Length: 418
Image 1 (cartoon, rainbow, N blue to C red):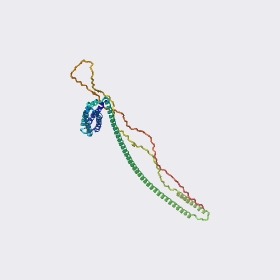
Image 2: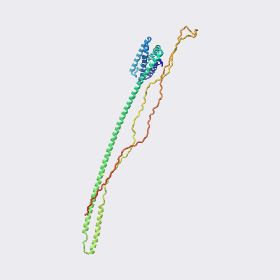
Image 3: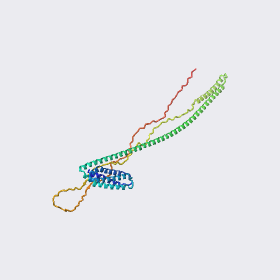
Image 4: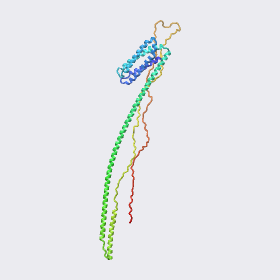
């Protein structure tokens, strides 16, 4: 890379930034801040290169000392305008007009460098010294680019850390909110369970009261039935006693005559049989058992019912953001310069006009890089949800009522025989 190409790269990029700044509106504050920061860094880098590498060489030449003083004064004015624009709000109505003034001053500065400063340096140094100077300037630019890249990486890392901290805080807040919601849901479930238990207890108490009332009624009926049976047995026994008394009282007397005793004894036998029949019938009625009381004991069991509920297990957030990365590319440029040579003519014969004034103008040209950007798709991020089905075994404990029956037999005492 030549010295002119190196020194003209900064003005070319600055001119592009000037154009982009002029196309922004007052509402695009962030864009203006970003573009002005790039412009300010580029202009300061350009004047730093001049002051660090070119001015020391020109100060050694007596004929270029005045040129160095003028260049230093221009650089101070340029820095002052940069400081003023940096402090000015980017949505101020005078911002673009001051940027235009800065652009005008820098164009004049670049023209002075191209016409006076660079030719003076190339004249003062040899070709090897110029290439050595270019190497030093490239090293300085590379170090500055590395510093800038490190700053960009630090800002990017800080932004990434802030983003992660913000996402972590949002995730923590979401987890706390979900925990609070779960706690409230648990409280509501507990309240519903308590109300259901209270209703079940009330219903059980009512059923117990009804069962107790029914059991009391059945006991009363049983007691009344027992009293009635006892009364009937007492009446039957009394009737039997009366009949026996009547039978004894009505027994025929012995007449001493066989015929009449047999007649009277047969009638007594028949009467005794009738009395015995009534006694046997009464005894059979007395042995009829009264109906027993019934008590129902319900046996219940729990049945496992497994349902399904959709719960939130996590959130995936995809955010697209813009990352700026410095890039560089080598470009081959053509420079056309006028070369003047003095040589001996081949012949002493004069051809054409001579001994007259003649002016020839030859245009020198340089190719400068023109930067343009195009947007193209690099890759695509496809976001979708995928549903899978799996079988999970649910294990739980259920309860059921069981009954234990214990029967105790009491032996009757044996009476001793006399």
